Length: 190
Ligand SMILES: Cc1cc2nc3c(=O)[nH]c(=O)nc-3n(C[C@H](O)[C@H](O)[C@H](O)COP(=O)(O)O)c2cc1C
Image (cartoon, rainbow, N blue to C red; front, side, top):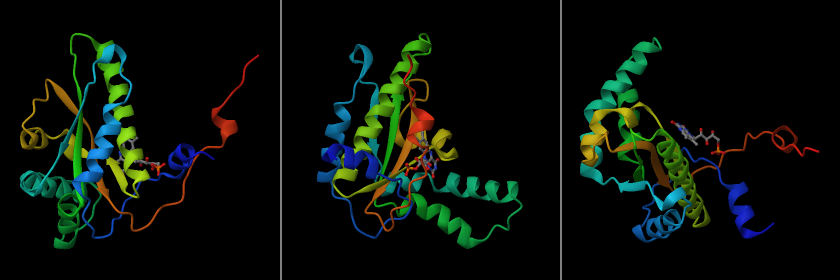
């Protein structure tokens, strides 16, 4: 297997990280990989926002509010431990990066192609980190659709859309893959 193939098939979403800082030099290598993603008409529609402690703290009131709502919706008791866990998912991620794709309300085909290109950029970024021994959880939880995160990043939801919040760190545990068999996804036709 080539190194590229090993990196692609070995990558897993990482949900738990060890307490170790992710240095910016590793993120920079991954941003460089993201920069080289394909995009039709060279629109390069992606942007990556690295969220430091102050930016993350701005989200806390809404993180708590969403966590309370989730408990109520699922008939669970709200307690401090649940709220702390919700806060820590954002505050304790060794690195946290929000990714956006640019919007084209007057050209929905362009917007769809740009979304596809931005997804390629995200995956380039994630695979580059993985090749450096760093894991990532791509999340599209409700916080990514809330106005507060747009405000915290200083961006307009009319111009760009957040398509992922990436929690990044050194893996504590690498989960087993759950994938379809090749025969279920690949078809040679006459
Ligand atoms: C567009 C997209 C959105 C995702 N959103 C979430 C999410 O909100 N929460 C989460 O835990 N994982 C999320 N994931 C990660 C998937 O759950 C994960 O890719 C899937 O379980 C397959 O595991 P693997 O990445 O290890 O192959 C997302 C992945 C993608 C591509």
